[in-house]
Image 1: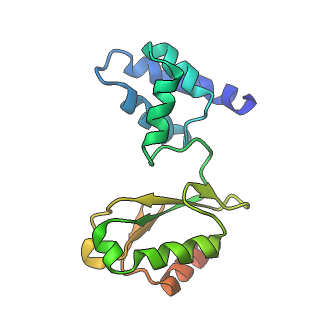
Image 2: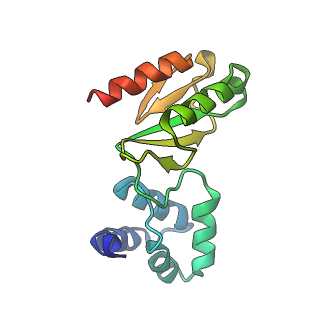
Length: 157
């Protein structure tokens, strides 16, 4: 809760900025996550109150969409494509390698806080499957060896 007190002013400002927008729940959630990196579980009560929704309704939306996080992200966010084109080019093998190498599952962050791993359902890089991103940089034809090289390069930063 103490962490949230530092973030609450930002959350309240985003709520105020979107208060009169029709269908404002998703833009508010995106605004909070884009600004703070995640949606602190304590923010759900403030969002629900401002929008006259139940906490369960807000929580349901946050947990339904894989994009939203309820924990702080790592220094670098890795997203591995799980769409059909990437699956046909062994993205499942890439996923397994990434999970084993990092020691985490999807929606988790390494113990040192360096990497978070997230699934994504199409990066629009189908011709270069399997694809992934590290932060906002798209990488194609990612083999386990290329994954290791990319991760090592981020470790050197």
